[in-house]
Image 1 (cartoon, rainbow, N blue to C red):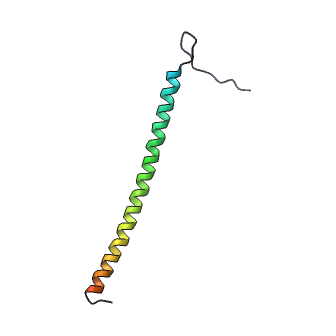
Image 2: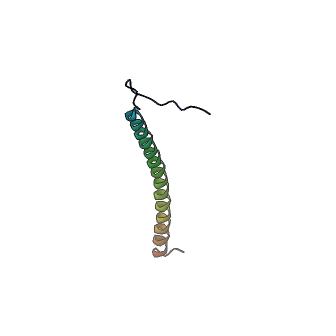
Image 3: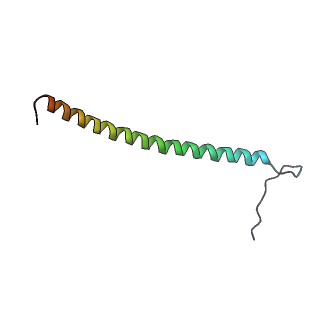
Length: 68
């Protein structure tokens, strides 16, 4: 069975600040990555909706102008 190395202070107590800061860094990186993924998805959706709206606007303008 592997023994897990625990980071300790010179007095022998566990270095909780090390683990707390490490967890905070991992949490912030996860949130940042999730935000980037969501921002990319949001930009894609806005672009698609914009193109659909543009298509409806052109079709509506053509219908009003006596086109098809």
